[in-house]
Amino acid sequence: MRRGIFGGTFDPIHMGHLILAQEVHWRLGLDEVWFMPTGEPWMKRGQSLTSKEHRKAMVELAIAGNKGFKLSTIEMDRPRETYTVDTLEELHQGEMQHDEVLFIMGLDTLHNMHKWKAPGRVLELVQLVVALRPGEGDLDLKALRAIDSSVAERLMTVDLPLIEISGTELRHRVTAGQPYRYLVPDAVGDYIETHGLYR
Image (cartoon, rainbow, N blue to C red; front, side, top):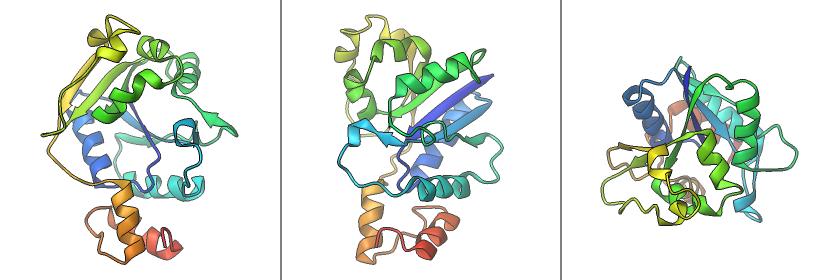
């Protein structure tokens, strides 16, 4: 199978995430896109995250009804800090050992990837799919080329419409009592209200 992995805190998951995943699924002919909420992301040490249970529930609500989307809790199920390379190694040896695996990310994530644990091994395990939006800047592979000179051969890009939605902005809007309808799926908005998240 040809599977995409889309990781993130999803705090909360929003329409920008879903549009990106749908575009990649369609344009690259993927069988599935796995949404993989982070458990204890090491790059966000000291930052406050909404509980795993709430973030998992919001992803489930957001992707319900889309047969091409799947939730994976592999990182959330770990009782320690999570590293992408460990997750990919586990999948490579197990559920995805015979699959072509594409790792979906934004340009900002790509530019920080050289700071990850074992980025060279990540590049060996997956094909990178980088979402490009108008006005975001250039694709800079200098830091990754120092790790793997053939990184450009392991990377493809997908152009997306400019959709300015971020989890940070959404949390601020909820906290401030500002409208956020249409920025998240209705079911996710209802969940946020019901559970009093981000207040």
